Image 1 (cartoon, rainbow, N blue to C red):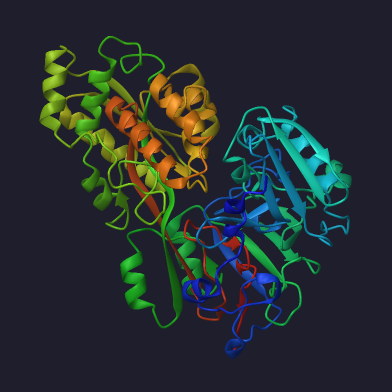
Image 2 (image 1 turned 135 degrees about the vertical axis):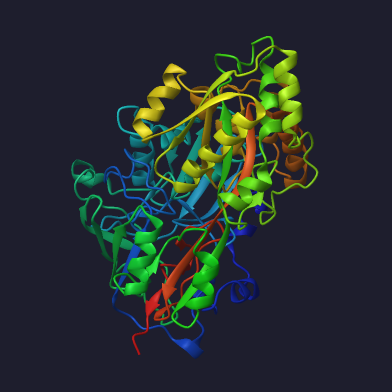
Length: 537
């Protein structure tokens, strides 16, 4: 059965696109373009500074974070996203879902190539997904996106049928370029040294923590306002610069042309003092900050006699407004659910948020005779807001009567602590999800990969609601189901929703035709870095 609800998202309405981007118009085949009044110039290399660098080059062994990794513009998936973070056609120009929700049929565009000239056909996509599913190769987060595949069937050169083990209304979100991107099958032996993808830019070189060089893919399937293949740029030089001040200084000094993000405490002054020299873009929710409590073992465990009361004592100690101001400089949005008000998935009626009331925390600790309960607050060192969030939460817990400590670790060390249950509260965050099931099934469902590793949250009722939502195509019905799930999450307080994580990108005035997607990705269907150009005049 063809389900038009999966195809209506594929066409960006021209008026919407013109309103959403500074450089707008329409192109053949429904691809957004640049208005003729400001025809883009081809050529030039964009110098782009990001927060992080990759851990490796193979885009299937490693996670290529689509907002911050300089390699992200080399990647492409079966499906894509538009500026609103909706799922749209990519290499697959259309897709159908069977009535029983167990078969997805993808019709691929003709003439799409990998960077080495090999055809992107149904057989090559099947090979890619089999490679990702190999536990010796596929990164765990990426592999989890495809674990429900029972079998794949190549039907001619441009049709791929994917059969699922279980009915799913949400599988399409799993084949976007993040995390399931495609490489040329005949290039697997060089994926760790010179990956061959099919995105708008080709890999040239990489020196870890120093520089990533990308060059234009001359045969990319999207076309520009001049009718020729995008992108307009000759290349991108990516410079990972972890510290916000270093990144911003590089932009102001002319060392780079664009930065992915700046410190929340520099945004207001930068916009005021440098408006004539630089453009800025505010992203409402690049991700969601949350506090994970160790509900697998120890005093917060789901099966501990006083576990729920102690978890709620922590929740009452957390002043989200103070975090909003002290960590995010008033630019974030305190939340009681995964999605901020900028998203169509936001629901203002989610219940059971635990109010800030440190006296309640103290009362619970006295009642349980657990004053000065030791808690190890941990955070990952990669992102400053996680570190700063851990510091302020640590102070709040001390004020509420907990004997809290605070430590920062790099990711490998922290993951070992998760496995050993050697932690109490984790100040962390999760990237934006195109599809809510990507959050609820991985983090909240009792069998979710991240939930099992880290939080340990368990609720039979929540499991049933998540599973029902996975079978529901109607968005409003799914929002009702997720509302109840989040009400359970808020009541149990094993995971405390904190803030929508904002982002402010900036670029020199000569950078034209650029706008990030609403959750921060710099590469999206018919826009972002694909339509960016340099005007040196």
